Length: 232
Image (cartoon, rainbow, N blue to C red; front, side, top):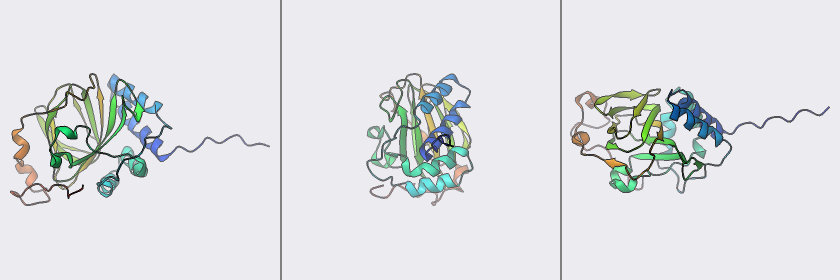
């Protein structure tokens, strides 16, 4: 008797993409649901490969391993296949600022998974860093899957940790600061997803360290925030 053909086991990459889609399918906004559907249509496609090994690979793995979120576990299993790269808006930033993060774009008009309407990807931010106040035309939702950050969204500033989501309506100023733990987050854009509107804003908090953060910092108050090593 011939046995029925067994369905091929899903790759670790597809399991990670499915876990990300599950997160946004549960967000409760129509654009999030449609973004999740677009991501699922990309299952089985190649994500390509990074042009250079990610300088933060060990740090990303350590951060993901600290989380019990399903998406973090799936991303950790697929980490070797995730094409991490530089910030797409690095040309708007100083080298030090651009070097504090790694970004992987998974879905947008240019691929690797094609979508003319949405953008979606991953962000890792190293410990002891501040990503300054900025905004853009797109509506955006971040979901932290590992680590934590002091997060500013408009007039609200509070600690966010794995499992928390933050929605930024179009043009809402936002910024994030890490202490002794970096973070890995999912992000998605909808609405007007142009990248040319991405702007850094006057930011008096950029050189200030909140008092409730000092005890958690991995360096002495008054000393410079650690920067990436050369080549990072």
